Every structure is written in C-alpha cells, then in structure tokens.
Image (tube, rainbow, N blue to C red; front, side):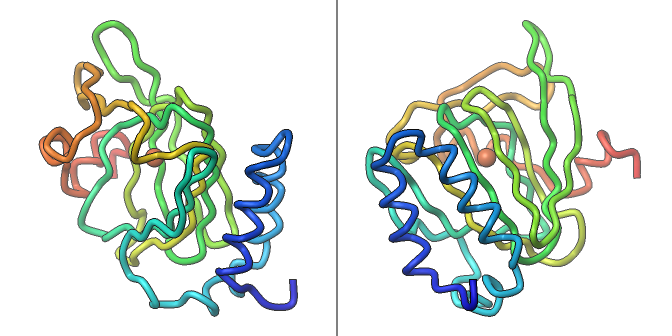
Amino acid sequence: MSQFDLDDFVAEAIAISKQDDAYTKIKQLMLATFTQADKVAAAIGDKYGKDVILYEDEKISIWHVYFDPTNVVPPHDHQTDVAIGIYQGTERNFIFQRTEESLTLETIQDMSPGDTLFLSPETIHAAGTATQEPVQGIHIYMAALTKISRSLFDWETGQPASFSEEVYEGLRRETAYLKRYTGT
Ligand SMILES: [Fe+2]
C-alpha cells in the first residue's frame, strides 16, 4: 500500500461484502490496512473529528469513529461481526461476560495505532480512551448497524435494554468510572 485512499478503501470493503466469506476477507483488509496506520492517519487526519457513517447497506456498515477522551461508550453488543482498526490514540476496550445478575469484566484490551480488534456478534464491550488523546479509527460491521436490533447493558446488573439514544445517555459515564476495573 503506497498510499491510503479512504474512498478506495470503502469501495473495496463494499465489494468484499458481496462476496462469499466476506468477514474473513474484511479482517484481512483491516489487518493489511492498519499495518500502515500512519498512512491512514495521513490521509484522514482531522478531516472528521467525529463519528461519521461512511457507508451502510444490508451487508456492511463502515464508520469513521472518534472517541472524545472525556466519555465512555457503555456496554453494548452489535449482533453482527465487527472489525475495528485504530489510527490515532489508544482505545481501551473492556470485554464483559454476562450472567443472570451481573456484568463481569473478562479482559481489558488496549488498541494503539496499527492494532485491529475483531468482535463476534454476542461480545459485550465498553470502550473509552486510555489517554487524554482522542481515539480515531475505522469500524466495520457486517450488517446495517443502524437497523439491527442490539442491546445496551447495565454496568452493574448486566440487564439488557434495546439500544436507543435515551438508554445510551443513561448509561454514559465519565472516564474516571472505569477505574473500578483498572484500579488506577
Ligand atoms: Fe462497539
């Protein structure tokens, strides 16, 4: 990859989404692309500085994602396969296991520029920034993310609720809240 072009990347991902074994090929595309995350950063830079849906149809959703360092994305699932690549900042992912009564931290995974993370449809995660630097990356979902029925989960009880702006706002936390998991 001599140079990263976002339009070309989106077109390639859309083409792959129509093929057999699309998710495997999307993972390969993301791995190859973010191996050279500096080129992605050079091409996108501060062009967006926010979440932008670059493309969505029934087979694939492609998002530019921006995490403000002051906020935390509450626990949620996606109900589809996910591929995440980071080109700026460090994203801290909290992966949970849910039982009848609780949400238990399984692992913490930090992603720096060049890293990719792949999540299965049922995986429950929360995310924030690990430092004061904003996080920017590209997220690919193998479905129309805005149309599928997925869940948010209570931080304490693991109680699921249908994903909505209202529920999301109710579960939103400050970064300091995550110290309960990291102890720092
Ligand atoms: Fe997510």
